Length: 127
Image (cartoon, rainbow, N blue to C red; front, side, top):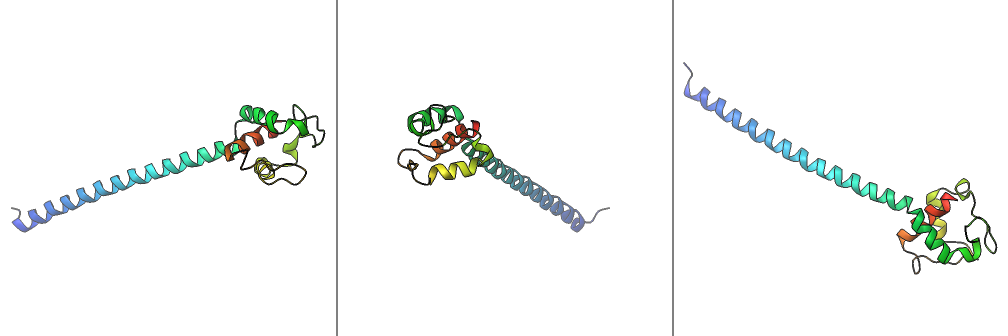
């Protein structure tokens, strides 16, 4: 026959184990939510870094075509941007747009937003 102390110890052990399992699974769920939020944030940053080339083309036509030509490939006052991706990666292109050397005008942040810069860079990288 089981002694009352052993039964009580067994019941308490089960209760403690149940609390620990519940706490661990709740913490795991929260850390998964945090990981998902970080992945979504990283994905959004990547989307921003890559930009929208179609929107970038419109911005390019409005702000850059007078110097680089209607498609960016012709050049003129500014150089042709054909195959710019062989000279600069996307991050370098964005940095150049944000902080250009004269005679290129500085359009960031007054005329172009961060998203606009990413979009123009995506278009230039596509040339």
